[in-house]
Image 1 (cartoon, rainbow, N blue to C red):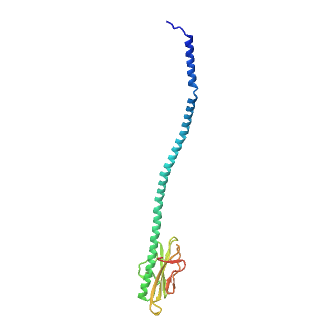
Image 2: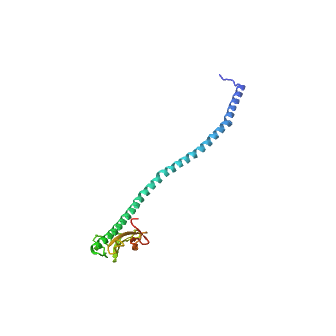
Image 3: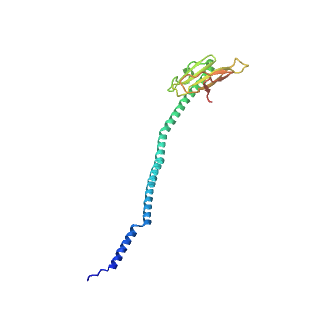
Length: 213
């Protein structure tokens, strides 16, 4: 059995299809929303990339830079401490030796009534040359000067002096000794100037200062 065509029904069907197609293709609001969505996605992606790069940079800053500082500090600090500690020990040697030579000159004067020109004669067991210093002593009738001269330019040189002075102004014949230890104001391997006696008191010469300060 064959259905007969209905011209009016066919016309309505065509009209409905055409209308539906037009509505689907031309919806301004929907198109605007789609474009806004696409634009938002494009704006979001670069932000995420930027945040990603910022995160990487922060990680590099907080991890690698402090680590580098720690490594450099670990290498440099022992060298710094070692250098300072080594110089301190070397300076202590010179101060102790020159101070002992002063005392040796005072002791030998009490025994012999005269100062000595020999480090060995003082009986202190001090070598005239060590790794860092040269030691010597010279004397006059009324004074003795002992030296600890540095063998390098980065160490301080020292000089000690013992002077013969009267016990009092009333008794000039009775004598005693007074001593002083002086350090050069700056490091160097030159012999510092000898101290002087001023109004019965030993005084460090220019370019040196009394030790202890």
